[in-house]
Image (cartoon, rainbow, N blue to C red; front, side, top):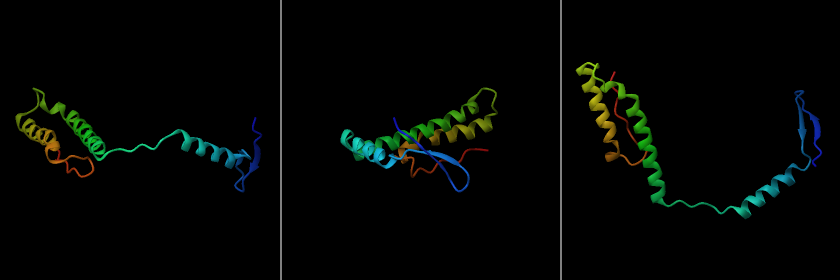
Length: 108
């Protein structure tokens, strides 16, 4: 069992310190290095992840405007949102990553 040392800092805060912290930390790092192989992602996997993030962001924006397509929404407003929503759907034809996308302007 570890014996912790009670230490009072200059600001009055009391902390309990493991005197073997550096040793424990080094052992943990050694264990991690020995048991976990680094993960390497291909450019294709990274591109697929970026496209998935873009689609998720787009889908959220579409969901936020679902109300605009209701039967009780005035036609002029509905048309603005229909165009905006189509631009959102088409976003993956122009962009392949959330990092460089330029989102269409949401109607007011």
